[in-house]
Length: 459
Ligand SMILES: Cc1cc2nc3c(=O)[nH]c(=O)nc-3n(C[C@H](O)[C@H](O)[C@H](O)COP(=O)(O)OP(=O)(O)OC[C@H]3O[C@@H](n4cnc5c(N)ncnc54)[C@H](O)[C@@H]3O)c2cc1C
Image (cartoon, rainbow, N blue to C red; front, side, top):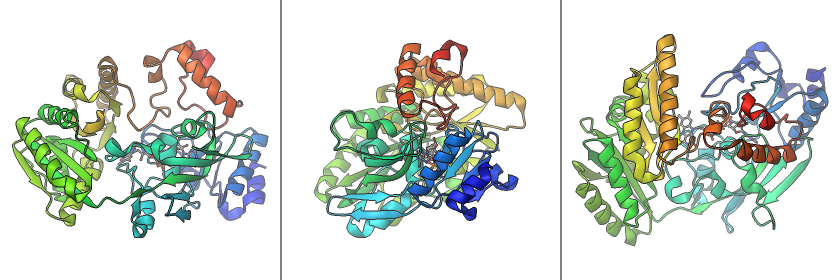
């Protein structure tokens, strides 16, 4: 009945119900759930609206899905239902170069957007390390960050308006120009729980005149972190400030030969972009600051190929870790930038005291840590140790005045942890917002909100 109605509405090629097809949509990059009852691949907003109406009639939950690279289980269909894959809605619908904006479908791969507008001298700034595969819809769902969000801001700062399919299959639009409440901002980062994005107006930026990348090596991650705070404290905000510890740089060098020193305790990658005239001053100042904070070596990428190699190493870091351990669990916490040294010590302590190895690669300028806790999931002791270490890291971030997610989102991974940052009243207020958009709670249920008895009123 469900299958036939979906086929009648959007065509047989766009509906998948074979078990081997459904299994592919049961997981994301964090975890796995039950297979959905059906997967649909709409070709238009109208198709999506038709699917939502059928889901509503049949009482089936709906989960929007981009590329499934999410790291908090947000796209996992924990209650089954219908998964809406945006793989076929991947076009750039309009480029408005004069106003530096474009309208895109949600299944467009992040990096494709910058490639498409490069000829206009423009680019799309939010650049998660998954940008070669993750989608604009998924980036909107999680309010994705990335190395360049230090100076450009996260996804929410680059979405000018949205076309949304609501919980009853009606279509509405939002715009930053709307008077009154900022609904666009509310929808970004809502992990598909408030509405489904059918298309988005995104902000484009003018490609910088000049880009420089520098690499500073340090004896340890703490001194690299102190240098990061000193650079920003001196009033210089480079476009990116990324740190990798020795575990990560060695893995990256083995995998990619990016040109990182393998004898350093930490590598700080710095990028600055802007007007050519400002570059010499920035370089002088940054070099002076990192050296006065204990940098043991300093070098500047000489050309575009060297810049790209250094960035390819950084963006491939998580993949390179596959050479060291069969599995890893990537944490995502944020602390005030000046608290990075304490946070890193807490990470090391959490890993060591639980007998596991950890590697750190992180958006240091944002205070956004990403410890990669390595383990073998066939060993129950190691699984328990990783969970314990992960919890200790979350606790340390909160104690340092930080928070439990810098960019990966809450999904079902951290929904119980939300009670450690918000009161029941806070959560109940958020649940009231959700109920305005989705009173039946059929849009991506079991995400963001805690399930525990103490939070019965917000479930
Ligand atoms: C190697 C690696 C590196 C990563 N690096 C980063 C990083 O630097 N920064 C960062 O922020 N994240 C990073 N991530 C996490 C992940 O890539 C991001 O969260 C990304 O935004 C998810 O996009 P996706 O297309 O895979 O979405 P999915 O995982 O498919 O979905 C994510 C969420 O968006 C919702 N969603 C998807 N499409 C829509 C839509 N059309 N309408 C409404 N909701 C929708 C889903 O329901 C879900 O809640 C990384 C992941 C990996 C594997």
